[in-house]
Every structure is written in structure tokens, then in C-alpha cells.
Length: 523
Image 1 (spheres, rainbow, N blue to C red):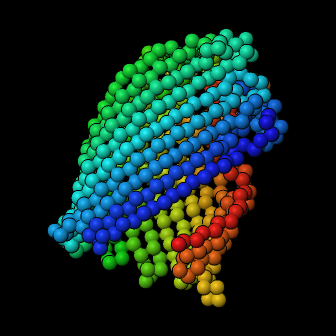
Image 2: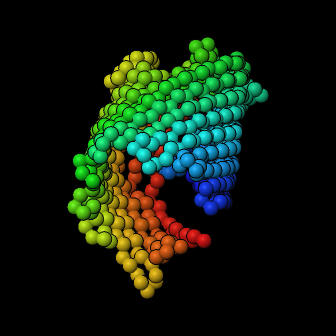
Image 3: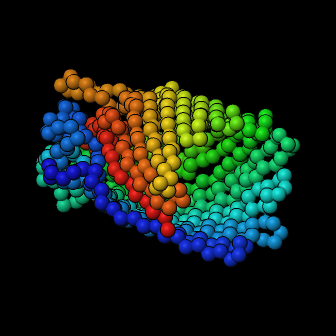
């Protein structure tokens, strides 16, 4: 234990923007941003020993950990974007968006979660990204309007990860402290896409929306793993030089009908995809031989809804029912390295089905008072996932990790003019409830340890939270000042349960009551 505060963050960030306007026919906007941060990362509270077999006893109390080093995360991010707009004499417009971003991340952790020194994890990732988008925008005076474009993207990602073992680990597991287990590699990604989105007014009440996006993405990997010193951990030794390509045509179509000037109904279909890739992490010989590649994920989504306003626009509402069917759904899995050790790998579930309902309401009984309410129901499950559970079990029919069956959000906001200050008083109170959910495809709720005790694992309880804000805002919105508090009632709750390299079971606690002051000035 070092005595330092976990989750402590020190950072600096900046953002600047320059706008050029040539009498409205041509405008250009250049934005620059950056961030440097250093954080003692919160890696969860251990609830078992390092190997997940008996309850944790070394940690002194709640929200305290017993580790030999501070978990450290350092980030450096730089970005820029240039947006240029031309209004042509024909009524068409052309837009160009050019962007670049560089990201460097260092992370180090005592992955045994104990005061004894077994292994330490360190990794350094860096990404360089360039993108260019060109758009042709049709005149908006006709019944038929559209945007057509081309998108180009290039990224180089470099990754270096090391597990360093101690003399104690050498005695227990036969590791070699002089030979850290290392993964090192680069993934080059190049992609392009062409797209069209538009609509056609069929009549005064009917409107047809349409679009498509054709994408191609190519990835090349050059990666090595050196587990010569891993001993009983059984980490692989080898290299991968490979490439993969994904092509996908994603259409979208919607049909809307205006029941009145203030109420519209619609039906919609859209397709999409998420590209495949490579798992560049610690893997066993068997997993390396089987291949570190995972496939693209595709989805077909359907939605129908009703939106509008009533009672002289004092009541706004949005109602929607939806369904989405996923193929080759990408999901994080724990991969067994032997001897209780695990690594996280992205695998493809055969089919996932989600269906649900969302309802949102905004009501203004007076000009100064606004009430908000939102409700959501969601059923998400693995329709087909043989071999996706622990030990290769079939988890078809299990619920999707991280998905609650229902959620509720309520809010009230009040404005009060203060003419003597040239400002308005703003008071806001929000309540949100999130139902319980699972953390893994196995849909576990607890684990029984060797002592016979049971610890919560794989499942997170539902929780309701209250946030509040009280502030002043000038009439011209040139300055603001506000007091805020989150988790007003100081609820104790979890956001995740997890399992680390040796099998340590951990709980991630939600943020306790926090409060602060926001000051803002626009010039």
C-alpha cells in the first residue's frame, strides 16, 4: 500500500477555433484540441485473494486496496480539424472535412491485487489517424434533397505490452524474471466509404427517406508474442503477419406520415456493420494456433414511432418500438490460459436479438417550469451462441451483458428571472433508475469460494440516483455560475464485477456523492 488516493486525476486540456467567412459564399473553420492527463487508475476493489479462491482479507476497508504499486495511466492526445464550405451559384454546396489525431497511452498495474509482488503489467499504445470527407449537398428548395459523399480513413496503431514477474513468481510458477512476457505489434488500417442520404416529399403528408453506405476496410497486422519466460502461465511464443478485408453495403429507408402539422409517424429500416480485427493480447499456444482474428459484426435494425407536440406545444412526446438482429456479434470473453489464469479476447457470437420500447415526454405547465420523463424497456439476448460460456458451454438464450431490462429518467427544471442582476436563476433536479444487469455471457450472479462463502460476481444490482444543480446565467449567456451535486443521496452501488489475470474477483464501485462549482465566461 502506498497511501495515495486511487482515481486521482491531474490533467490539462485546451481547445481553440478560428473561423474565416468570405461574404457567406465560402467559410472555413480550423479547430485544434489537446489533452495531457495523469491518473492513478481505479482498477476495482478485490473481493477475493489473487487467485479467486478465498475472500480478500488484506484490504483495510471499503474503497481501499492492498497493492505494491499505484495503477498509473498517462494520456497525451492531439487533434485538429479543418472544415470548409462552398455555396455554389447553382444552389449546390460542397463541404470538405479534414482531420488528424495522435494518441499515446501508457498504463501500468499490479495485476495480482496483493501486497506481495508477483507480476506487474505495463502497456504502451499509440495511434495516428488521418481522415478526409467530401460532401455534395443538393439545393433544399426542391422536394428531392440529398447529400452524397466520399470518406477516407487511415490509422496506424502500435502496441507494446509486458508482464514482468518477480522472484516470488519464479518460485511459484517457474517464470523467468529476466524474460518479461511481451507482445509487440502494429496494425495498419485503411478504409473508404461512399454514401448517399436524402429524402423525397411524395405529398404534403408523406415523405420517403433513403440512403446507403458502401464501405471497405483493409487491415494489416505484424505482431509478435514472446512467452519464453512465462513458465506455468503458458503464454504463447510466435508471430503473426496477416491481413484481412471487410466489405459492407449498408442501406437505410424510412417512410413518414404527418397526421397533423405537429404530429408525425414513421417506420424505418437500417443496416450496419462493425469491422473485424485482431486480438493483440496475451494468448496461449492453442489460441495462437487457432488464430487471433475475429470477424465483422452486422446488424439489421427496424423501428416504428410517433413524435410530436400537443396542447399548444406545451407537451412534447416521442414513442418508438424497435428490433435489431445481429450476426457475428462481437463480445469480450475470458480466455483460459491454464492454471486459473485468464486473458480477455474478442470473439463472435453467432446471433443476438434485441427488442424494446422507448418513450420520452417533455411538459411545460408554465413558461418557467419544465418537466421531463423517459422510460425504456429492452430485451437483449444471445439467440445463438454455442460454446460461448465457461468451459465451452452453450449460452444461447442468455441475456446480453451490460443490458438492463428497463430504465427510468425523471427531471424538473425551473427558471426565475432576476432583472436586478441581468440574469436568470436555474434550478434542476434529476432522478434516474437503471435496472440490474449481467456482466458476462454466462449470466452468473455469484461465485462460491473454497471457504464455502459466496461473493457477488457477474451481476450488478439496480440503482436509483439523484443529481441536482443550482446556478445563474446572464441574460446574454455571456457568463454562468453553478453549484452541482451528483448522487445526492450518496448511494452505494456497483457498476461492474470483473475477473483479472490470476482470477481475482473485483467489484467496481459507482461514484459516491460528489459536488462542485462550474464557472463559465464567453468572449
